[in-house]
Length: 362
Image (cartoon, rainbow, N blue to C red):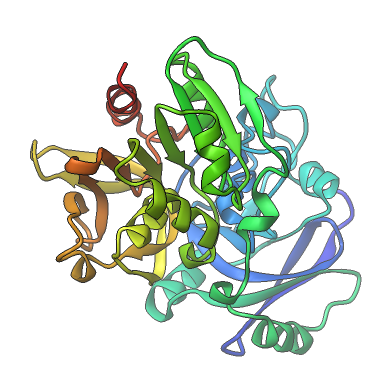
């Protein structure tokens, strides 16, 4: 894989793990998180929800089908760095335009391979997510990496949404109902799912005020996914609170959490989050269990829902966390998981986005 570099990842608990560096020679810090998905590393690395995080794949071989820009979820790599057991340097596929090493170099992001990702995943599950520092280059310093990991701010204290939201409004023209979409770090597949239904989409930055939303006279307000603590989305929380009851509202992932906060519920940080393509979700009305794709570190506190008017519609069968809720009297509907995810189970894509059409009055 080109010229091998030294690499070390230091964790806030004092752990130092040495390996082989690839990608860019540099030092980055972030929250170490793991995903269990087998495929879709291009989608994950470019997902704005991974901003501020060092992404580790539990699956041992990453890069084996190269990099295909058609799978990108934003215009660049959003994860701060990459941790893998093995990085494939020569992908045998005609669709690949470059290797994982080439991609990280182009994005000026570091990676480390040769890591026992199974052991590090188990450690994360037992102790929770840990702040981390990844160093790559000719000479690395494990003690310094640990120090930098320990002194970086907590992810809850960092405004990541402002780093990934669009800088100004834009319009995706369609002949159907009009959607006002607040971009908290939206994935391109969400926009593709909405465009396939010919919706007229107006996308707004995360700090947009109610008056800008009202000015386009939308049929529905939609809140996207995004990174970090939902409490940082103060402007979006206020918009939902002000507009609830005056037009239908829907959301995915961070949008789901923001809507819950606006309705008076609370959110909290999960021990190690839900990240992967195999999270089981039970629909409480139908009794069906769907396998879903997820990427989040915060969740809605189900004990805070009493008295808010919220009805829990779906739960995670692994840990009973809230995966979906509605407020029928206010035409509010949202889910925690990603129905648009590719790769990932597509069982919920039609169900969720077709319901958006119904809410908008189509």
